[in-house]
Image (cartoon, rainbow, N blue to C red; front, side, top):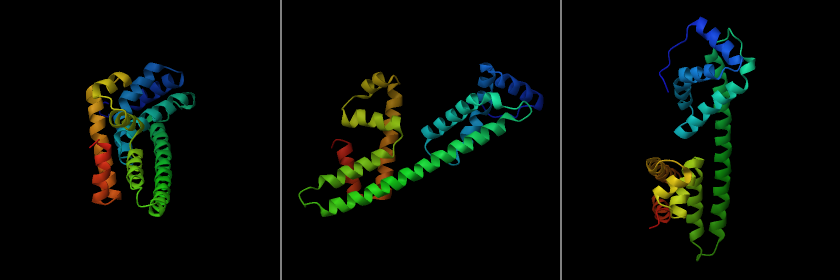
Amino acid sequence: MNEYVEMPPKLIYQINVRLSNGDHEAFLEIYEQYATLLYNFTKKYIQDQDTVADIVHDTFYNLWRSRERVKAEYPIKNYLYRIARNVVFKELKKQVKTADALADLQRRETLRVAAAPADQPGGAYNMLYELALAQLPPQRKRIFQLCREEGLSHKEIARFLEISPNTVKEHMSLAMKSMKDYLAREHDIVMKLLVLSVCMGA
């Protein structure tokens, strides 16, 4: 992503006309020009870097889909900001719904565990593990499950997902940090250690 530099009005007009006519090169020029700007804008509202990258991608995808409605004299930056705000708003609404659903699940599971016989302690730990796992982005969650639940090595996961071993290693490190942070934030230290011992295969 390149550093943002404002386009002169004449160039904005020309590139808008090219974009509205379906010029793919014009679209790529716009991406190079504004991707960093949108990334930094989105980071103000969304913490997860993978989600931020997805939102930037979706913003440009939506711009391309609506390219025929682009007005030649209207700054393309304004279109992108408007689209990005809408995508960010939808993502925040989704996160709120997810948080509410997880909170409801946690309340129901807590009541179930409290009512369960004393010889069934594993349910509480499994519930905490699943809640922590649910916080991860889809790709990171998949990598974590392949490694910890299915026993694949980093190289095997890399070949399976067609990514580099270093990328797998980074996702695993970030997954463990996210889960530890979630457990530290939501649960007491004893539960945290017990669940981590499960997910680390101790």
